[in-house]
Length: 384
Ligand SMILES: [Mg+2]
Image (cartoon, rainbow, N blue to C red; front, side):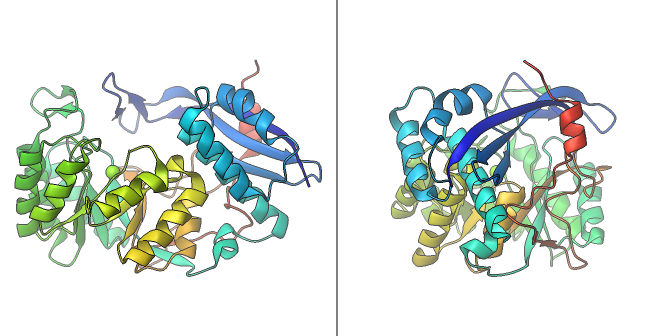
């Protein structure tokens, strides 16, 4: 079997957020949407088997990666993964994100070929996984989060993650640069959430890198008093030494890095530096293959590897990983009034349905389990 084509399908859809000039999505509220273009990467073979992954930059994947992939055996994922890793390092304008998307599409193809879900190819560990409700940022003041966590608890969620004021000034109610952040205002939200959630709910806080070192220490100690489970990505992640000192000084678990390039290799260095208590990665930093390598490294080191963000590839990885290494699926981003069981218009179903105990049920469909609405995608296809 040989790869016969690599294509990035572009289609028009809508989004509830738009990027601010500070680079972080600003939510528009339920009533408003903006038009956007989404993509789907498709890998075809001479035997008619295909693999898919949402996302992908058309110019990079078709212009740079496709010539490398044509004629290759799509089951040689490790060989291709290493080639793509080298392209990221010194290739012409290729990204880690696009390499990850290609890797995911190859896993999807292998699953469709064998008629098995990816977590069974990796080695099945579980058919459902604990999850936390992960809020959208900038939902409003403490009273909004107070009500939202109560609603989530009623829905069955056992854990809840606060994204408070991120690239948002609560005093002017306008977009703001990432630094300086608003730790005192964030803490008011974290306190309200603990008060509303009660003692038994697991609580997490993610400031998305908006604090200084001193602010992170201060916030970490306050969150320890409130019995928060982890403090995630509190500072800019280019400064590893700050994280090493923070991890040493605080009792609360530090979860990082979320957004450093270098995938599993960079995160191995973080582990050697003791720069975090728990490591973090997603498929845009090394694909499913890279995430799986890091999960196994973390298992050997006896530390957690918590996957960043929702989606089919992460559900499949969690289905192959034991809870002792990968505790949670991140479900979101949620906000009041959002129907979290409603799929995006280009999907027939969501990747993360919940059971009655607040666990995410892992898809048993072949491959990644992507449930694409082809009528919608074809109808909204961008023709160049
Ligand atoms: Mg985060």
